[in-house]
Amino acid sequence: MKTFRLQIDGRETDIAAHSDTSLFASMTRAGVAWPVSCRNGTCRTCIARLLQGQVRYEIPWPGLSPEEKDEGYCLPCVARPMSDVVIARA
Ligand code: FES
Figure 1 (cartoon, protein in one colour):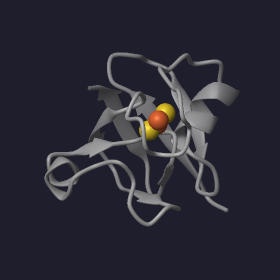
Figure 2: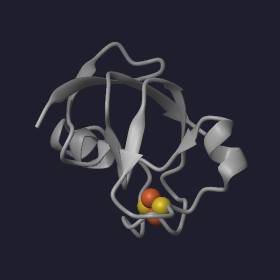
Figure 3: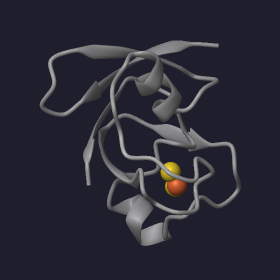
């Protein structure tokens, strides 16, 4: 397991984001509120813009189109960090 920094655009506090847990889990552990519902990558309630960094998914096809991935959207409930990450509400 590696630990990266998760930043939410516009907030000054960094969150420790572990490579083996979702960005949403890291936010929850840090006490940061984020919209969430299904927690399995299908409903898109948690959708965010990935402004910096890389994530990976434990499920084969999270609820994002290839175009949305290319445009920098991510689903924090199932996205796990592969580097330091900066996200923003979509
Ligand atoms: S909470 Fe449903 S896709 Fe993330």
